[in-house]
Image (tube, rainbow, N blue to C red; front, side, top):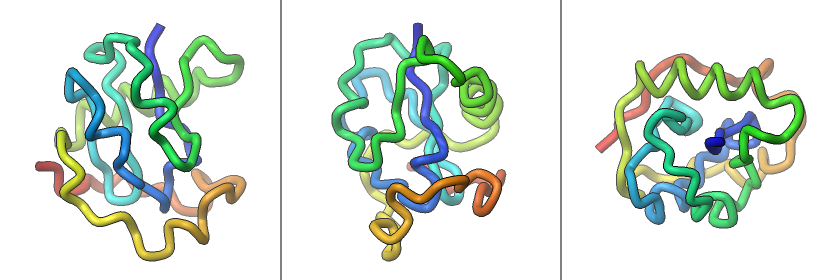
Amino acid sequence: MTYVVTDACIKCKYMDCVEVCPVDCFYEGENMLVINPSECIDCGVCEPECPAEAILPDTENGLEKWLEINTTFSAQWPNVTTNSSQTPADADEHKGEEDKFDKYFSPEPGKGD
């Protein structure tokens, strides 16, 4: 098992999860984070820290797409280990919004550390 970041993170990117990760397995895109499934130790400390409830165990049904997205983009985006990036000013407006992947996903990398 591993944890994955889902589209609930897109346009929110609160970064609270990054601070608690003991193995630094988060990677930063322009408008979301992903977890490297090979680095995740399944500790679960990140899941309750996410205000957008975007982090889920990959054992939940229907998360195959998100496991693939996390795997792909964690190999392309820079590692992020601290909450040094600013949460987007309009993050709360997008919290809970549906279909964010189709509307807003960007493959562009973030800044990382």
